Length: 410
Image (cartoon, rainbow, N blue to C red):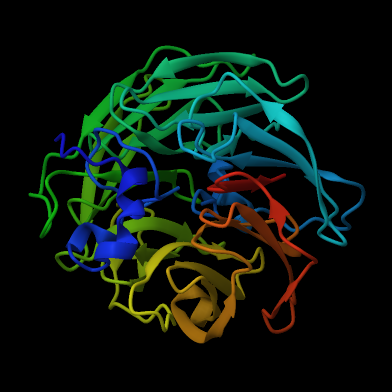
């Protein structure tokens, strides 16, 4: 599994060798490491997590009646990368103007590249994207680190909280594994209860192994889906909510070499949108709650005009009317109208992301603001979302944040 390339180092070479390999969709840029090349990644979404409260989950959260007062914003980064941060960035945003104000850093958490919050809002969770993968819990009230647990895999890149609040789910890119940890009443994590390796099918063209990129609970809460870039597969699991174990029930395959990265559900719960970063496409997927089976539709355009582009993830508005896609390389946000109750995406166009290499998108809980974590420019862009036509309008200048790879607005 050790190719001598870390997911961050890989992007540093993209400028010189873009498109040289099917894996060139991977990465972030910067330091050496021992994990196979991986597309920089992260959510939440978006909604990617839907009800899981991940960084991408805010896109499918219920709309708030009226935003009022500053709201918390947490920022993920790399601490072992040149120019990176010192830990989890802590900030606040004005839900009306979109203005971001920094308020410090939570230290003691190495390489916290992806973040999620407990449904009760009292605990923040972060990955440690290192060779020895781990997940960390932080109490939000006083920023105290409650401890970390090893995932059993390598280079943990994404995590989400099960809607019931009792289980933390995580994905390890380097080892192609997914893990489950219990959450106690204080929000702290217990010892791992499950570790599953994606050993089949065989890795796709140019891939030297499985690369689990995301794990998310379906909106109905009945299944857990894991997206694996290396095997071109989305795995469906049933989570035993008493034992914290995973049982596979179905698999959905993209075309070979597509490199699926991130799945975001429509609020209706029957459809989801899949970003495939290696072949620069997206697909509408249908989900069957009774069986847990996902059916992946035909590939569609990301709207990117750049020669090299790696779509990162979708965010879907709370009313399900519009979807937004982060395009790394093209450095744009693609806008889609969602039609047929979620079954169809219609590309409306793209707008500049306000920075370089937008790795992650997140909507504010009320859907009024869209945040972009622009990794290479070290900025977080903020856009007002027009509920009438899905238009995006910049909310002032981007906020400076070292190697911004994740933004989690609460």
